[in-house]
Length: 148
Image 1 (cartoon, rainbow, N blue to C red):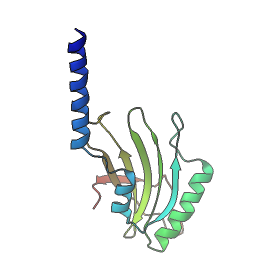
Image 2 (image 1 turned 180 degrees about the vertical axis):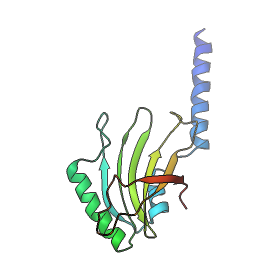
Image 3 (image 1 turned 120 degrees about the vertical axis):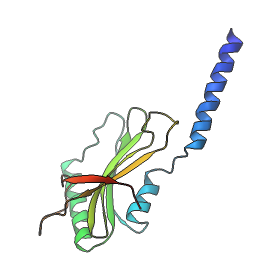
């Protein structure tokens, strides 16, 4: 009985390892560089610990907004993100500017909860801020698209 259990455990381990080989993780930075550009200004990289809220503090929101607004007005590429552990994967959200547009993104390193699926990076177009208004995290965003 023990040898059968050991064989089952080994087989399940091999299946999990094979899935991770089928779905290698590129990571958040890969998607950000692909979407915003390797030369994009980083307006904030806010990393959270387990059980810590994935929202921006007032100070973080202010700093990210100033930087993103400057980049948007100058038509420069920029982004900020908030990243931390979810229940069974790494999660992140943030905003980026590209080609005179503001976009929001979401990242999940394992949306199915394990190694048997590919990571997901979804970008949504946002409304442009009104003349003289800053880029803020609460701009309305719709229409999910894939990064270029």
